[in-house]
Image (cartoon, rainbow, N blue to C red; front, side):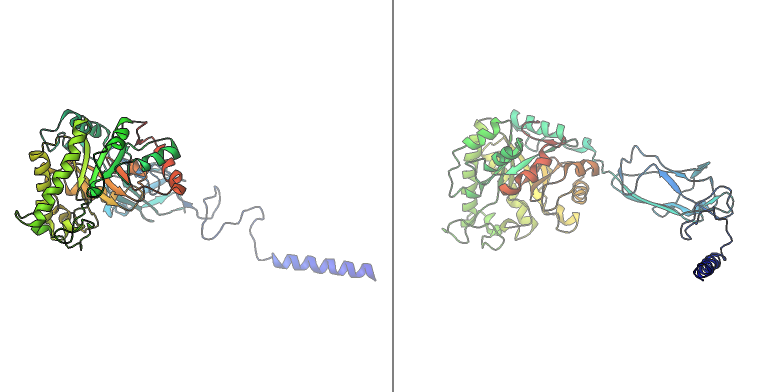
Amino acid sequence: MKKALIGFFSIFFLLIGMSCGGDDNRDNDEPRLPEDDPTEIPGSSVSGVVKVVSQSIEQDAVIDSENTQSLILTYSGKIAISKPEQITVNDRVVVDAAVDGNVLTIPLSLEPAISYTVVVKSDALSADGNNTVKPFSLSFRTRAVVNLSLVSKHLCNADANEETVELYEYMLSVYGNRIISGVIEDEVNGNSSSDAVFLAVSQRPLIACYDFRQIHTTDYSDISAIKEHYGYGGIVAFAWEWFTPSQENDIPENYSSDSGFSVQRAVINGTWESKFIEDDIELVAQYLQMLQEEGISVLFCPVCTAQGHWWGQSGAPYFKCLWELIYDRLVVRYKLNNLIWVWSVDVSASSGESIYEWYPGDKFVDVIGIKADSSGSMIDKFLLLNETFGGKKMLAVTECGDIPEPDACVTDGSTWAFFIAENSDNDDIAIRWNRLMSNEYVVTCESK
C-alpha cells in the first residue's frame, strides 16, 4: 500500500511539472531576453537593438574647443544614415555626418565656454535585418579660453617703480597657467593666518593681505610682520575697509552703508567729511611710503566691493569720484609708485552692464577682483567679468570664504590670477588647505 501511494504522488507531481511548462514552445537552450532590452543574437529571429558601445566624448565632459573637431560613436552593429535631419547639435541639424561600418562621425564646430547637446534620434539611423537603433544623446561643455594677449602689459601708473613692474610681470607670467594663493591677516603687526597655514601644511600662502581699517587705533609704523612675509618671498597686499565717523569729531568705528558718513559730502572741498578723508589718505600714504622705501610693492585694494558700505551708498558716480580722488592723492600728490591697483566688485549685482557702471576705468585699475562665498571654479563669475571688461585686466578673487578648487578652475578655464581666503579655525585649517597647497596649479611661497 505504501509503495503504491509513493508511485501515485510521483506520477502526479510529474504531470503538474509538465503542465506548468507546456505553453512555452521555445528551445530550452535559448536564453530568455528581457522584453524592455532585447539584444541582438546572431542567428536568432528575435529583433535586436544596436546601440552605442563607445564614444570619443564622455557625458558631462569639459573639453577644449580648439582640439575637438568631431564626435565619434561606435555602435554594436552596422548602421546607415536614414534621416540625417534627425542628427542635431544644440538643435541644429548636422548635414555632413558620416558612417563607416558601425562608426558614426559627427563633425563639430565648437566655441569656448559653451554647453552642447548632441542628439541622434531613434529614426536617424537604420541597422541590418530587423534590428533597431537605440537613440543617443550627449551633453558636454567647452572650456573657457582667455585671450591672454588682450591683458594689459602695463600698469595704469606709468611711473610705477622697477620692483612693482617686476611684480606685475611675474603675475602676468602666472596668469592663465597657475593660481597664486593668499590669506587675510587679522592684524598688521602679525602673520598669524599665514603662520597657521604653514604649521598645518608646511606651505605658506604667497600673498598676505593686511587692512588699513585699524589706522586710528593701531601703530602701522611697525612693519616688521610685513617685512617678514616679504622676506619669505611673499607678496604684500593691503585692503582698506575704511572706518569713518557718523558725525564730526566722533571716533571712526564703522564702514557699513548706514554709518551716517556721506560720500557725497566727502568729495566736496570744504566739508568736514572731505577734511576727514584727506587726513586719512595722508595717514595711509605715510605707511605706504615706508614700504616703498623698503622696496616692497603692494597689491592695493581700497574701498573693497564697490557697491557696498558707505562708499557705495550714493551710487556709482560718487564711488568713482572717490576712487579717482584716492588714486590722485596717493600717486600724484604723495608719489607712491609701488602700488598695483586692485578694484573689486559684487558680481551678484545682476548684469554686467550694472557692474560696469561702478568701474573707475582702465587708467585707474590694474586688476579686477570679486568677493565670493562659493567654491568650485566660479566659471560663471569669471566669464561675466571677462566679457564685461573685455579681457583687458587680470581677474582675481580678492576675498573668499570657501577656497576655489584649482583643478576645477583649470578644467573650466576660470584662470583667476589669485585668491585671498579668510583665515580659518585651527580645527579645520589642515583640511581646507592641505589639498589646496599641494596642488600643482597653486603658487605658494615655496613653489614660486
